[in-house]
Amino acid sequence: MILSRATPLLISIALLANLCTTVAGKKLTRVKPVQTYKNKDDLNIIVNSVGPFNNPVEKYRFYSLPFCHVHDDTDGFKPDDKRNKGAIPHKQRLGEHLAGDHRESSPYAVQFKENIENRVLCKVKLNQGQLKQFKDSIMNSYYFEMYVHDLAMWGYVGDIVDEDLMGETGAAKTYLFPHHHFKFGVNKDKVVTATISTDVSKKVDITNVNEPKEVEFTYSVEFHEEKLEWKDRLTQYNESRFVPSTFEIHWLSIINSFVLVLLLTAFLAVILMRVLKNDFSKYMELDEESMEEEESGWKLIHGDVFRFPAKSCLFCASVGTGTQLLVANFFILLLALTGMISMTRRGSILASTVVIYCLTSVIGGYVSTNLYLQMNGKAWARCVLLTGVLFPLPVVTVFSWANSIAILHGSTSALPFGVIFTMAALYIFICAPLTLVGGVLAKNFGSKDMKAPTRTTRVAREIPTEVPWYKGRVPQMFIAGFLPFSAIYIELHYIFASMWGHQVYTLFGILFFAFILLVIVTSSITVSLLYFQLSREDHRWWWISFANGGMIGFFIYAYSFYFYFHRSGMNGLLQTSFYFGYMGIISFATFLMLGSAGFRLSLVFVKYIYGSIKCE
Image (cartoon, rainbow, N blue to C red; front, side, top):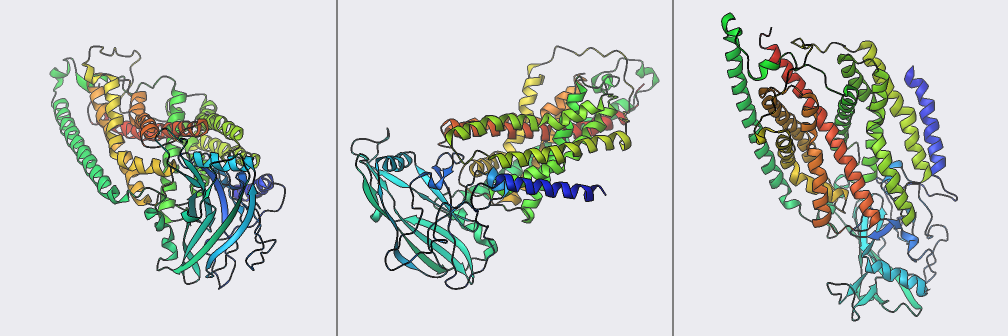
């Protein structure tokens, strides 16, 4: 009944969003990747963007540079005025907007399996302003991006010759590449590979921009038979010269890290179980006379260990939001692994992330409210509200800043109003109501009993202050973050190279395995550190176990600085704002996600050890 009522609402939202994202003028329909062709069928080449190679987020319209908009009638070829016309926008999905795409038609006239040796696209006389545009773009290492279906093609706008380390000198020459050579691999009736290259022999010197210059833009097309299956078409990017080819060490490094972490986790588990076994034996063998003696160790604080933490509402909201992110991340990786989400289109993954986060909001609302009620909380509605804004509010803050910078720069990374409206509608009509539904379900049907095995005393026990420095909170938090971080360090490099570079990430099987191992390692180390904390008679474990579990988020954010300054060439206000802003969001999400995982296992551990001994 609820779904049937919600369906018309969702359809209305989708239609309204589609209207809002449509600009004036006609938009071309999408071409499905699985489209089959017959000989001499038109093959559409779609242009997407241009921008600095080192700043992948800094994207601009392809036609922000004075490229050809129409195909000239030359060499005995008569172009179609409708088909061979550029700058006509294509319809885009939500994810493509989120990825900063701006796909438009191009004037290239390409037909399936029809080779073209050389054809003039257009002859234009570039004025001083247009020449300066091209020269500035070449100086900033601009590259362009084109598509055939979902097959991306990249190439440089031009090049600088005789440039020294300090930049352009008087002897340096700036060259424009006006010729593009398209090479398509064909398997039967489908296009499975697509690349573009430039002919250096046809480069045009545009060093002097003070005088107009006539430039002839040309192109050539080559088709060849390819044995690559359509389903494996995206593997070509692993060997592309345009992206770093370092996958040969990927498997070996990952396996090495996994083995080391598994051995470390097993070592900690064995030691912890042996220590616990000795503790249980010691406490069980105490007779009535010895019970009168003063207790020591973690048993001494049995009357305080279930004393609820300060700011319990915020704590419960953090656990609920982290659990929601954990479940959402699991489903995203699972769907990517099974092929239900495209692994190569960043837009597809981004859109799926938004939708899955909204749909899992009921989990966040339920978990946070249920835990809050178990802590004898009264203002459960406040807890639901805090859960609903704890993660979206920082996202909106970062987005507002980054999107404003993108608008000022005229970048296509700035989301249009229609997409912003769609995102707001998803939150207002799906995310927020589902969070409330989760809270109501927890209030009416959830267990309100913490099921603590010991009774909590009225007066809190004093916590010892004299502890060795290595048992202090800061060193242990460092250990809690460093060990899990070492498990994913190698994988993290490839993820960053994919997120903030031009590498296409396809090894979601390894990523899924790394994610599961990360959760296990983080939870195990959190429990180990919790035991040492309880052994020194410190019963304030709630927030500490959560923070220990989430400490890897701080390490990831620290690594982002290292990657930015030492592993990438990113620069500029726009790229920096997007990079550090959204890396902060990712690190915060990791903190909540793994913090909740660490706390959950810690709670099970505390209940187990105190339920296994006899306490007065």
